[in-house]
Each structure stands twice: as C-alpha cells, then as structure tokens.
Amino acid sequence: MNKYQKVQGTESLFRDPHNGAVLNVNVDEIKRAKILKAERKKKALEFEAVKEDVETMKQDMADIKGLLQRLVEKNG
Image (cartoon, rainbow, N blue to C red; front, side, top):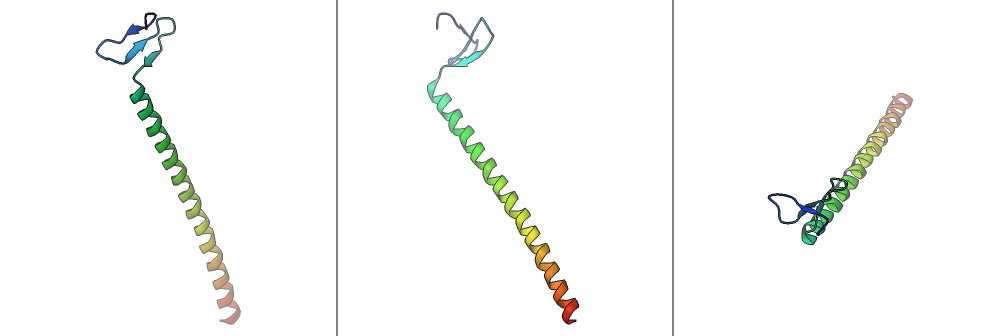
C-alpha cells in the first residue's frame, strides 16, 4: 500500500494519487457490498416480473370482458 495514501478517518480506504480513486481494501466489506448488490438486482428482477404478470392479467381481463360483452349482445 506504499503507493496509496490512507484516507483520513478510515481504516480500510486508500486513495490512488495518480487518478484520485478511493479503494476499499477490507475484503469483508467488499464481499458484503457484492452480496447486497446481488440482492438488490434480484429484487429488481422480481419486481419487473411481477409488473409483467400484472400487465398480462390486465390484458386477459380485458379479453374476458370483451368476450362476455359479445355473449351478452348475442344472447341478450
């Protein structure tokens, strides 16, 4: 870590003086961040799937309503 400068007030963050990037060297924090990111992505995908299901159900209900209306008109 000689080429990196320690970020003041932290134990695991270092700054690259060449490009200003802040690097986290705490492996446990990195793993936890990756797990949280994967969980957020999974929830977002699940939410999108639910939205698609709702849209499909709306269309199905509209189709059923149309069929019922035609039946009533034909037999009414």
